[in-house]
Amino acid sequence: MLDIVVLFFIFGLAAGLLRSELKLPAALYDSLSLVLLLTIGLKGGEGLAQQAVLPLLPQLGLVIVLGVVQTLLAFAVLSFIGKLGRADAASTAAHYGSVSVATFAVGANWLTTRGIAFEPQLAIFLTVMEVPAILVGIVLARGIGQQTDWRGLAHETFLGKGVTLLLGGMLVGWVAGPVGLEPVKGLFYDLFKGALALFLLEMGLIVAHQAGELRKRGLFIIAFGVLMPLFSAMLGLACGLALGLSVGGVTLLSTLAASASYIAVPATMRLAVPEANPVLSLAAVLGVTFPFNILVGIPLYHRLALQFTGVAP
Amino acid sequence: MTLKTGVRTLLTVITESAVEESLLRDLDKLGVRGYTVCDARGRGSRGVRNAAWSASGNIRIDVVCSRALAETALRHVQARYYDNYAMVAYLHDVEVLRPEKF
Image (cartoon, rainbow over all chains, first blue to last red; front, side, top):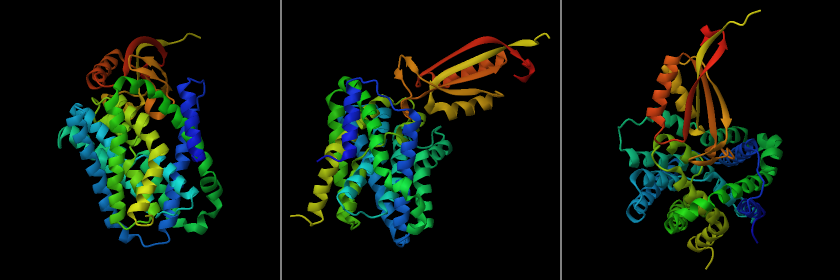
């Protein structure tokens, strides 16, 4: 059975492909993403309030390395096999090295629905993994030291909407703890599924817009959009095992690794590497990888996690 | 009561919302005293920009200033952004009240 939130995605996708008049107000999309980001932050913070934080630092180091390695690999594949220009390859690689909050939310929801627990630090991993790919992508496109406005980009990267809301939510959740969070749980926890469902309806519409682009770009982008997340998921799986995460944690870290950014990275890359074609990377990320991950990827990563953690034969 | 108006130049730039901050910073540096920004949607050589979500949004910036400054700004915009961003910019003369303000 598909999750109810995924059904909403398919609904949006179908409506978009049929060119329905359906259009959600842009302000709603923004509000929903705000609720999702804050909730993920709050839940992570709440979990972290109940354990020691310092031992997590080395884990963060490994997760950063994961993001960097993914970006470099994607860049190599895109430039040598895909024959993309340097700017396009670097920009698209940054999308794949970074992560997607929506995919994470669907993955977390998939696990919660099935009563599978995962570690609270996954929310920190999500936040941390947004950034390194962007920096690596810019260096790949530009080299170091040229007239890149690093200060402006750092501001954009570290204080962008996503990272700010995630970190802010985490801090609030951490300070408040489970008891303090009680009064706002109605809005953030109980409504999470509904908000995610509506959000995915809009995502379906957005993904449907990519169909035309995909038809133009052809096989390589589709193949890359499916194979890259599979490969990244294996890297994520290995990382999760190395960190000794639970089955849920390994599944979610694989999902994170497999996911590709379509909000933070495109916005930053647009400024940092303007000559890269944003249509190309968005077609791959939104048109192929995002739907692949939420429809096929997450259950698959869970099955792999079960096998490798030795829980299932 | 007579209206005391003067002629100034209105510079309008329609572009991707991605460059809003950087463009406004440039305008400030060039000495522009004020501007108006609004969200926009439309269609052009780079396809439909429907503002359905943030990455596909456009903005429209209006600046009223002297002819010389407007031309400097337009030249800057052309050099810095025209190659890589969806952008349309134009000048027109407008009559404004309190021309000394601009």
